[in-house]
Image (tube, rainbow, N blue to C red):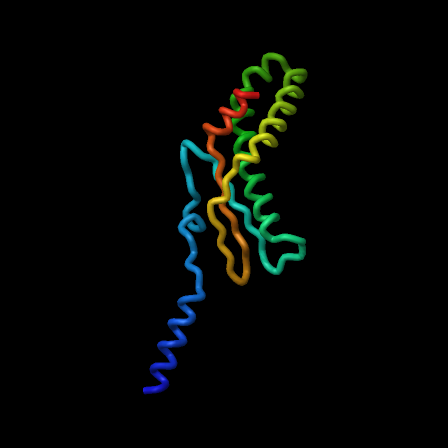
Amino acid sequence: MINIRLIFISLFILSCFSQPKPDWLTSYPESENFWYGIGRVDKPYNGKNIREEARSQAFNEIGSQIKVDISASFTRVVVENNLILDEVTNSILKTNIENSLDNIEILDTYEDKQVFIMLAKLSKQTYFDNINKK
């Protein structure tokens, strides 16, 4: 009888400490209103701050999606004006992405013995509103 109680108590304690994996790890979030980014850092991590590294990766992923969307909207203009406008487009793009990083939200994190993962999002409406203000 004591062994059965010990087993149940052990299982209960283990279940309290195990963190279930969130849905966004298996099903990448998609929305017409947001860009999402996921930063993943394997353990052991030799850098200074594992959270900052995951955050940086998530922000870079969001930035790469913005770059694709903006480049697509400028394609026709770039072709008509060739290389001169292409340089202007790149500098505007870089400035817009850097200015919008303040509006990125950290939604969730997941951590286990092997990895630290962070989910972030940026509202497309907020991003374009900021561009229009500037």
